[in-house]
Image (cartoon, rainbow, N blue to C red; front, side, top):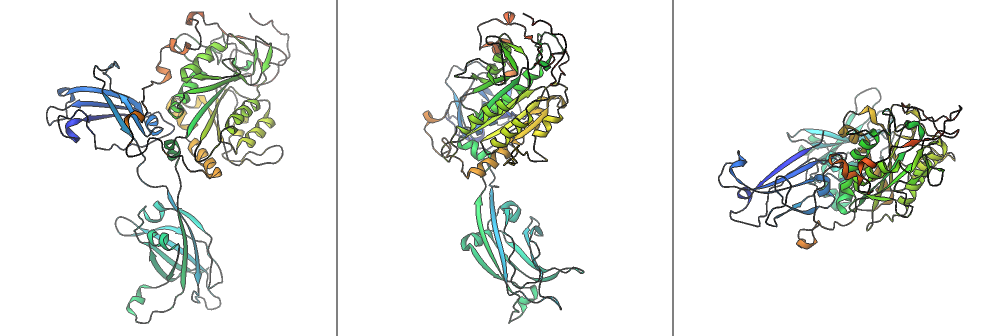
Length: 564
């Protein structure tokens, strides 16, 4: 479900009284979820007594609304305080919110271990050693954190380098002791204990290459300690940046949308059509656009989205197009905000006839071209998410897969939402969770960039968004690792920033709660003048049946005349 948080800030709690410019010291900690729209509300009250149980007893000074993603993408933002009904306050009161990631869990260690002159442990052999690493829990017990492979028949083993988070290795405490034990593996009995030593991340980071003598507890009582061999650890400590690090550094997440206008969606005049827009009821295309668009809006500061259609016959040219701008402006296919996307979608039906076949390769190629135009570096970072809304089978599988494989090295993720109740088995093949896609030339995708989800399997927008978007941060990080680019320097993240430099943040409600008229800002026509879409059946088109389940097979029957 959507996380709704109300933070009540009371002047008397955290600062001296009678202060018109208070600096609140208390921190509020929240779990951040990229795939959710986490609403937040800040209220400011003037406290007249020590009790805070009944806020109505205190003077209301104003409130501000936003969502967590807006704050994360800016790190520091200024908002105007308003009345509870949203109207402006008489005083020009503002609140500045600072946001940062807490809990340093992103450091990791690459550790390479080798042994020297380990003792003979077997009667008829040498030694089959391996290492076990332990961290100390809060109650003082030792918990295993890593185990190396066994190196057989050697006194001087060299284990494979392993990569481990500091949270797993030492609870993110660089001074906390790490216990390392060496054992001799036996096939038919329990392992034999060789010896142990202790170290810390601070010691390993300082020395880079540290040598340790293996000892047993009983050795401490002996004057002349038995030689049980040496273990050398080579450690490299590095920071693994999180998705939030890149977003807070200023990386732009750009949304591109492509909508299916093939005949298999059904006659839009029929209430069973997937494109039917009835009074007071939105269709699955509209709901999917609003759900995903509202979540991604805060990550794109210019709020401009290129929107395309595919599989339609354009009235003006009488040609079937497989990737055309939905605002019919080839030089600038972008529209303003999610409301703008919904507006051009509704308006498009006056210019197109539903046709076919369903080709996705041109849409993917267009998104790949946009993504490849951005120079991904430490100083400039843009990542594109292509949202494809379609009703079923596509007819250019080989070309589409080739395009996806080629785009797997670009800053691009592809989300496909299946609308309607068709068989989506072919679409599921594009989602390379189980088997990585391979092109017709035998080239394997560098990473999985496609996520497919059938719309009707999710009863709420929150569950749909979670399923659709939860893989995007990992796909993003895989690309960042490929480019070996660190997050950009945060523009507003410093300890002091002049007030005029802090971005002013205006609250934008979700597009699905806007009035219906608001979606018409791309056209001057009234809602009542909105045309009903027509569809066309040709020997190359999909059947436009009322149920919207054509799938993608050309029809072979007497053709009715296109409706005017």
